[in-house]
Image (cartoon, rainbow, N blue to C red; front, side, top):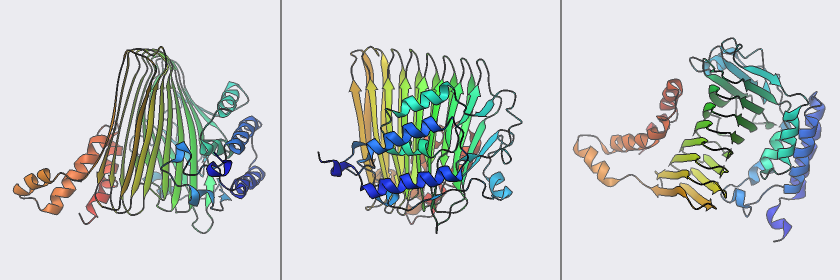
Length: 438
């Protein structure tokens, strides 16, 4: 295959390299960041920007993103206090980490409720730097490379062995935005959860104004018998790009239960990569999106079963109206020796218009002979028999359709373990289904 078939024009890559020079000039970076940057930039130049023929971006058109002229974000931009408080969930008032344009802001954060159970620090030159740099040598996602190249700092959140964090931790990512001068920023986190530790985390992405590209990356290192519950809420304005790379490593009998909700924007892309490294590890990954207009949400998932008796379950649902677009590209790899693996993968799409688009690519790669693995995907419209039944019970056609579409999405929303998030999504995500002429 000709290289020009897979890589964007060199001018596009050069523009980001030039932006990186401006980024370094505008930020006083720790020496610990430099090896990460060098590894990330080297890999970025090797990979180049993908076009649609690239297997990782078969369903995602990044042309508008890579041809946009971005500026360096201002991490000290002013944020109204009410905007912050309005986006902090009840129960997280004393356990909220606030990031402004990709940079941790201690003055806007409130950590009193977790200061005795959680250590939050900026990365220094140690094994974390070496591990991230080594990982980047094999990074296959060019935007994850950019996330590491453009991070002003790496925040390490550490929960020591045998620690149960008493309240949920919220990570609030606030982007200021400017539609006339689009900016780019990259929050970078490492979560280290010790043996027998337990933590619940809510991550929320919001924008004060439209006009930005948030490109986040985070690692979850979960030790033996530890448990993590993570909920991610994407609530950016439409004229934004939101990309994320979440990498999860699970040791013996560790658990990682994750749910993500997406309202969509001009382009949203979630990349999940999980490795069940030791016996008995468990991963649950759920997702829901409600899309209208020209909103898009894309999920790219790779789950590696590397040890016996591990479990992974995935369930994603998308409601698509107008010209909305979603995709799911997910592969479960069962490596040799990973006997007694149990894995389920299901993607359901509900189409409310003839112009919507949903692409699905579930896949299994099995190299062990004693496993139980299933996968499937559906694309459909409202069931007319159910519609008829509800109308015979006195509902109008519009009310019946609204009830069925909400019920479809609610089955994922209800798996979220934070009542405050469920309430918010009922008032925001599901509200989008009320405003449509269905």
